[in-house]
Image (tube, rainbow over all chains, first blue to last red; front, side, top):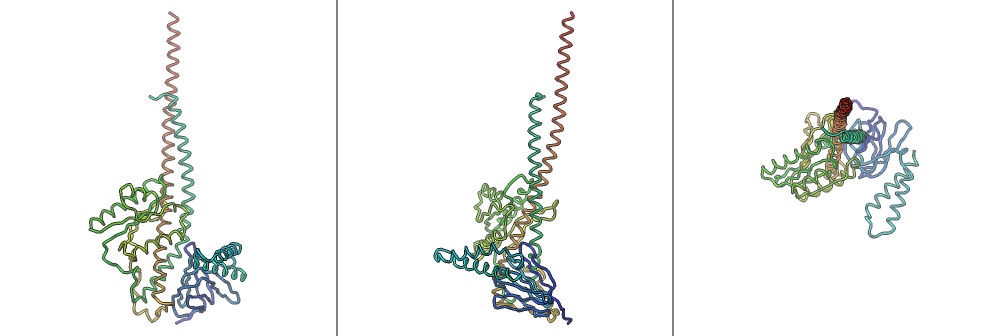
Length: 135
Length: 292
């Protein structure tokens, strides 16, 4: 079998395609742990955590925020299906900060809130802000 | 023949109607373009989703409740219409297909429940004395993926509780600006996936998919997502079709108004001339009478 030297990485959401590119390496956070993919990887499918996905071309590494989804990995391509996704340079930091504040306030009032929802919102916001710094 | 004044009044009324239909056409055109763009945005996701599903199907051993057909005693029919009228036969066509399906299903001795997305459909069903189980309205033009998720959640819950054993979707498939087709498709149980048969000789080359965390866990998330996508797609299709239908209807209305104005203007001029002729005759008659 001829090994491809590049992977096709596609990130798509219901509101459009976020990325479609040829890359050398992809790393992402699966629900069972982080993983890295080089060309020729064993095919697998995994669910993704809310988190970041990075891809590398030469020395150039870029980051994408991925809001839960799946990755299908085959030897020559990686397809990511996410509820939403943003490139690190497209992240709206102000909005994320506002969301973080809202979530924190809600968590302080402990009772009568949807704890899971607030925590999830806080997590999303935190990761967005982290990633925004990495552009 | 109606009087001059009356014709004049009708002309101006038709003119203002024409202005409205023309404006509505422009609005529909703008909304249509937006809806079309949203369909294009969803497309890659939907395609990739079915790709993932079909490659997953290669490794499937055990079934999943959403995939398993059970004897269909109770059938749910979900009808997608618009929220507003003035779009030609758009809503009527969908409802006609819906009522046909209801009748056929009842004839086959199955129990039918109905749900509706879109105010027009929901209202008509209620007028026809149906109990509308699920009713989602006010989505026109601003349906988000979250809306589709909410609808899918309700549907899947009810399917799992065996409120119904089958779900059929009646919606308008968007083909192009000129062609929209009313379509009936079965949503639940999910139809066996296309290309789910994996040729055995290719198995070595492709290798089995490793699944993380487990096949069950992935199915539990992926299949409902597939339902969401299909509903979202149907909603977007219906919306694009609705606006396309409205555009065509308003275009026709504007054209008809033009014809009407032309006809009325002709009538008006004739009436005016007749009045002038009559006046002249009166004057001439009067002069003749004075001469004597």
